[in-house]
Image (cartoon, rainbow, N blue to C red; front, side, top):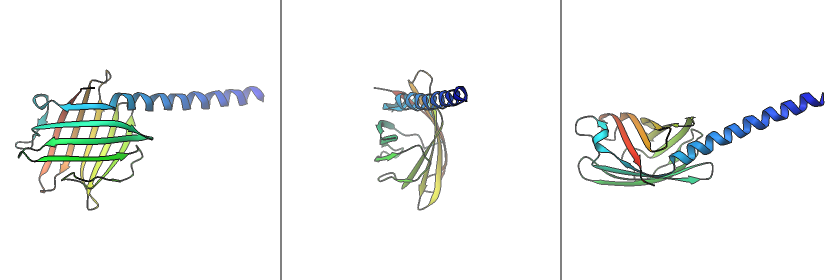
Length: 160
């Protein structure tokens, strides 16, 4: 009886340790400053960002995201939000295409991000951090605030 309880406790401890390790690995790889490599990225005609910088910082059980972009038409966008990886909407202020964001962890290197505006899903993003933690690839599908279909594969390189 005691051996069975000890085995069960050990199994729980190993499971929790693995979950914490995976979360820590993903958070460690995603945190930092990321700069868009426009030449390696793919956008629909006329939708390529001139530049984009993402800053990911640990925030409780989630991440604080700060975005600075120069849009295709030269206008600038700056927005930030903090979100856990629980799929719950959080407010986004300053994003021309969204007022809410929800993040969900898919695996240690992959996150799903859903942007909404006025309650409507605008875009779904899949963020994949490379195994070496040096590249972040963001695949986006959806619609922008102008009603245009968007589809892109943006490649970001870790700066710090």
